[in-house]
Image (cartoon, rainbow, N blue to C red; front, side, top):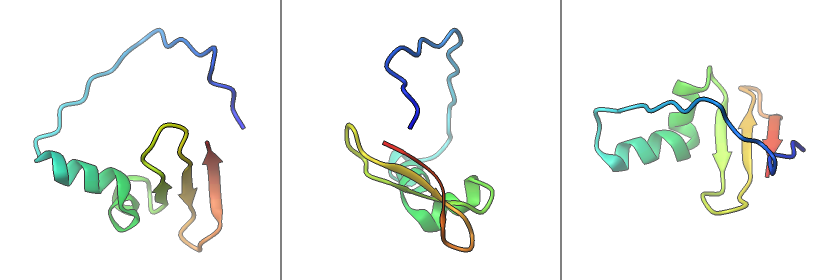
Length: 67
């Protein structure tokens, strides 16, 4: 697991998406949509503080996991 407690980014990026908030949320949280934006990998997340973030390879096994 990566220790991010001391991570201090030097650059901040802002992205503006021309879509309703519920569609953006779908695109970030629902695996059938995340496949479109993560090069075929499905993102499985627990949308809460300390929740798990997993990228699932197209054939099923986890490619990475962070919590």
